[in-house]
Length: 282
Figure: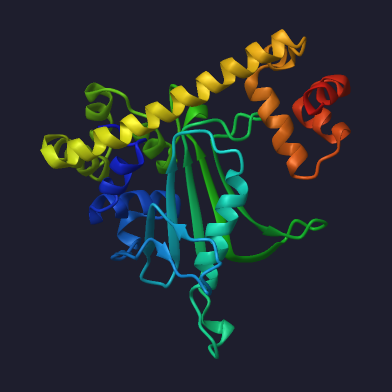
C-alpha cells in the first residue's frame, strides 16, 4: 500500500506511535515532548442545514488543546487554498458555542500533504504560513496555522536534519526497499513501515485500499481524457493555446485570475508574457 492513497494515510494515523512521530516532526519537537494525542470526529458540525459539510481526513487533539487536521491529497485540486482555509476556519470556529468566551479558543493547524505541485514558482517543498502584519511582518496571531508539504518538490537526496522532510520521503515511497530503508531512520518510521506491512496483509483493508486506488486512477483517466478532448477541440477551432502553453501553466494562470490578480500580476508571477496570459484568459 502507498501512503499517498488517503485511505492508507488515514489508517497509518490510527497508530498512536506513528501519529506521535509525524506530529512531532510537524511541530519541530522531540517525540518525547508530544504527549498522548486523541483522534477527533472528522465530520465538522454545521450551524444550519444550508451550511457546507466538512469531512476531514485526520483530526487530532493534542494535550495542550491544539487541534490539527491532516489531509492527504493526490489529485490536483483547483481551489485547494480556499478549501484549506474553509477547514481551518471551521475547526477553529467549532471550539466554542453560544455564550462561551473567546478565551477558550486554542490553536488550530491545517496540514496539507500534496502529491502535486501547488506553488510552481519556487522549489520550497515545505512551508508554514501564519497571519502577519503586511508592513512589519510581525506575527499577528499563531492561533491559526497552515502547513503545506509538496511531495513532488522533495529533493531526491534529502540532506537535512528536518524530520518533516524525512516523513515526506517516507510518504513518497513507491517500493518495499524504499520503505525498508526509511524504517532504519528512526523507531517511528519503523513503526509506520510495520503498520504498512500489517495493512497490506489484511484482506479486508487491502480491498478497501484497492477500491480507493481504483477511484483515484479512474479520476485521473477521466481528467486526462477531458484534457485531450479539450486540446483536440481547441486545435480544430484554431485555439492551440492549451497545447502550446501547457496544462499546468494554464491552470496556474486561471487560479491566479480567480484570486483576483490582474493580467499584469499574473504575467509577472508566472514569468510569461502579458500576451500569453490574455490568450489563456480569452
